[in-house]
Length: 372
Ligand SMILES: *Cc1c(COP(=O)(O)O)cnc(C)c1O
Image (cartoon, rainbow, N blue to C red; front, side, top):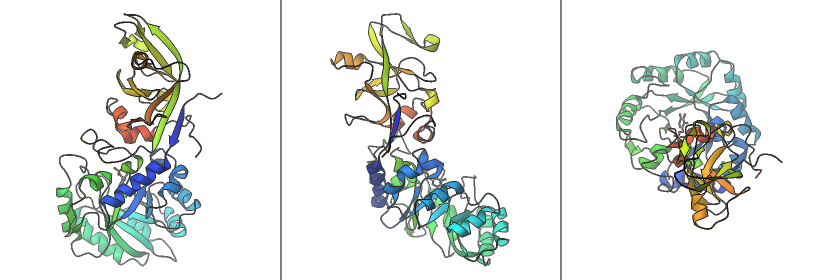
């Protein structure tokens, strides 16, 4: 018998969350961002549910090959472009659209022999200072690309650093408007946070979400601006459940401690349950005592430190309600319990000092996924 831990992907939640982007950006085409193996959910497990997107955006060429192998003939965008010249051969062969964010990528393209010219997204560094051409270099980069026979169509991309927070996006929109004014081409600016929080923003007199939006985290049902907003506030549903079971229980008396470092001390009689899930499964080791968990569909909390293969949970809420809790009882670490109760991944990430993105991407290889 394998350990009882199991991850499940919810296709109906993916469909619903994709639909949320359609509602908020009705004029835009939607890239389903499936980098990092669909944020840990598995590209193959998500593909059918996300077929309704207009394209798939990712950054690993092997992942692009997997999306083509699933039969997708529509647009695929490489968000970081190519990493070396020979990647361009794969772009030609699989008709991948690719970002161009630096002069090296333009040099490689200029030297590339292709029958079918490429569609490229020229990336502007509008203030995030990660990838992209500076505003000063942007026009000459466009002019050079525009003169290349290898290039069929040029679109414009930038990425927001603060769409989820108080600084917002206005300063970057101003830079984007100035750099792209009167250059012809489609645009893509919005990530999930911009889709959700800046649905009415405008760029160059057009809706911010006019051409293409890039929906990542919201597809998977985590709020990019938690705790200011929860996934439920945005009407997003969890696309993943990580669940396991109790494999043991202990009766504690006042003064008894739990786990390594005796990080939890009982102040009276209580029962604790031991869950088959630890940091080697991707559960965050920094989750403190009190991190929420669903035991038998009832909200409870962790007690004691997270260890490699186990965590310990408080059974008091179930005992107080006269509900059974013992070996075999369902424990949901995040996602949806059999009872329908939901524990948002963001509520686990936050006390552990991280974000939903990291937890969903970090589910360990040893955790099996339910077959659909
Ligand atoms: C990952 C990524 C996105 C998606 O961001 P979310 O916050 O997950 O919506 C969009 N654009 C680029 C360039 C990215 O790398």
